[in-house]
Length: 169
Ligand SMILES: [Zn+2]
Image 1 (cartoon, rainbow, N blue to C red):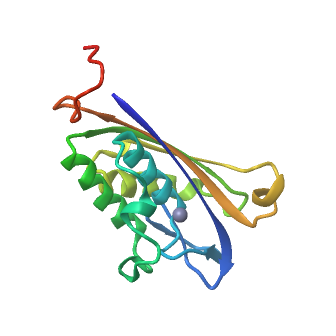
Image 2 (cartoon, helix red, strand yellow; image 1 turned 60 degrees about the horizontal axis):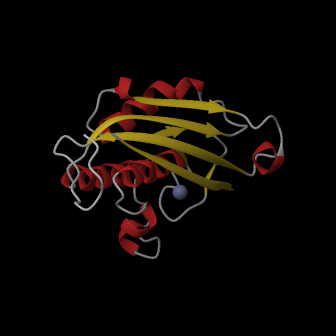
């Protein structure tokens, strides 16, 4: 079993759509970024890449590459996942915590879990998304932006792809 962690943050900006976990969320402000700034998809992408030791989202999709400008990050998550599969890993589960004051994400949680799981070719019971506020503290509390922490686990059905480590099985 392999575990990976991902973190992401983006500032809110006027004139942007708010897209989180692949879901369009009605809100006066969206998140600023080179892509669609879907911080949930970004953190989860880093978590699966981290679990597979395949680098990170910035290395796989450089933000100075015009190819990825305004890209749907849920599609980048799927592309990264296909690399993870190529490397011999199987997705097991992911758990995501989103920290933001507004808007309330409860009505969108199920849809986000479904979209994220679909990008990972998994059932939605394998992906958990939780939202909480920062109790009004700091930059998140002032509504300047959001932060996301994601953890993902992968299985190695074909065994470790790199030799040289200790075998304990
Ligand atoms: Zn990001």
